View 1 (tube, rainbow, N blue to C red):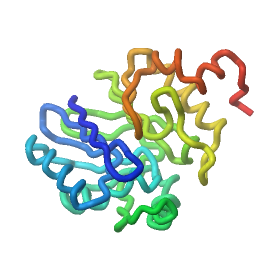
View 2 (spheres, rainbow, N blue to C red):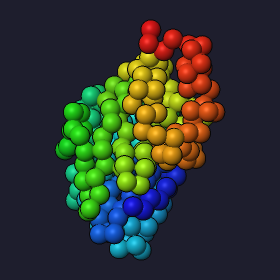
View 3 (cartoon, helix red, strand yellow):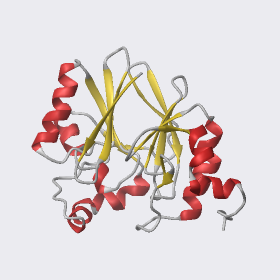
Length: 222
């Protein structure tokens, strides 16, 4: 499985193009927000002969959505996200304006990831792991053979996602990380929604939010 990270929009969001030997691809968290960024994404896909089959989002915050409608329209592909974040999708344009970002049309939710076990492209299956906390419908995408995990804004390198935005909850994000992500194994590579990649082992040792829970300094369940 091949992974490319393209950093887009004023919030420096990570957009991932993921493909396998079939050259079928998915675009994860398309954040391209300008004609220049659209062209960058389009050129990357064209130069490698890729065929996108889906735009999929880990969650519904606007900075991860800014390019989704472009991808869906340009490549005639469906948009996948949890319906639990549909309220964020519906308010995406207004939310972007609050941050001084101009947003175009938001995509239509075609594939509901809520309760779904996996999505497929080419010969690859991405497992869907519910990781609420940053948003109610947040999911992570896991490919067990490559040991690759796309965490969106749940888990960053030595940090975690904000929980002070609408629908956020600290207890839930820590449950998601401790109970659902750490057991995947230390060697699992983490590709977050912002910033550099990491792995589960590094985060277990050096992420202060995780360490204080593992050391029982914080009761994350209450």
